[in-house]
Image (cartoon, rainbow, N blue to C red; front, side, top):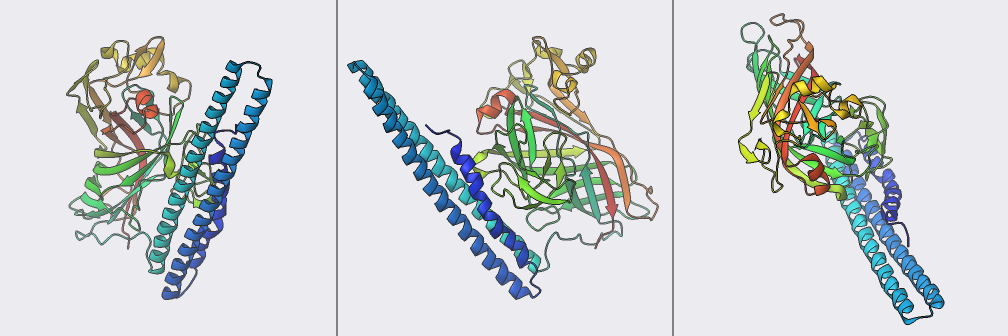
Length: 475
């Protein structure tokens, strides 16, 4: 019997055939006349989808060929077994093995066809999305700028994540102390503040295709917990709300709402596809488990362990393990604390399990979770050994291990850093480094218990994100 993973490997090779068609979309942008440019976009989209159909047909044919080969192998094995049998019981066993062999061959064939269909669907969606981007550029589109600040102050905020982030997900502690993508940015249009009398701005960060922030918050986020590799694509579901940005003190509070699409990829070395561009903004080629393998990409973020990622290199649609509604409110440079009030195993829980029984933590003594346990034991196992790049807040004992944990009050504290030159100096742009924002939130369960059970989802999440900020006047 053939290896069960041959369909995915063959489909990855077949996906390379799409490179030429998708790459031609860039050529369409070179057309100088708007009508010609749009016509070229439509033509290239048609060609791109046509190539996707050709790849699907070739993949389906390959599935059929492999099935026939497997069935033929089953027959040979049956005949060989029968030729050696001398008893009726032996012959019955040989026939039973033959039926199981056929059943497995047909099962692999069905999975192969499903993969081929999913690859086609993902490729078609990519062709359509790229065509929309192409047309937007023909129309002089691309990310839009901010309107002037009617109060006379700066109108554009840019915040960018730097190294040193800490993301804690789920109640078991296994998903704590993860890093995030370095270089992911948020853009906001500011109003209300001025240059001398009022340093407090409010604002909105437009989201969606062709907007200031685009469709997603940063590139795909690779995560590895308990040897379970996932790739999370965070799509905005509404515009970003900037409740306050104080130019004088650096204090900030905002809200994000996301549709977090979790992909169970199985690649422990690179949970998300990577882009070969060596730094943020560098051009490279997509690598790994992606329908855009070998295509041009621009690196949008870097990670300590899992390479550089780009929204140009999405994971396979077939790996989707659930779409989670996540509300990050507030995201603050101050202290964000939430007190649990849902009765659960071990005490009180902040979040319902979404159908899965939640616990407060996985400590031997649920009420022993504290910062002091981290200090006394030099931190949790994963942080001490350098397996996770994050920071322990609270720890406890589980058997002989020291693990990170949550209590019934989850709190994280950011840090406000004012920009330089200091307000009300009229010089812009103003930049700030060394600040942090914090958040505490609930994470719904995915569709996969392979993810939910070891991580403790549905359950709470918390983060500390260090970053740089820039405030300026932009046309």
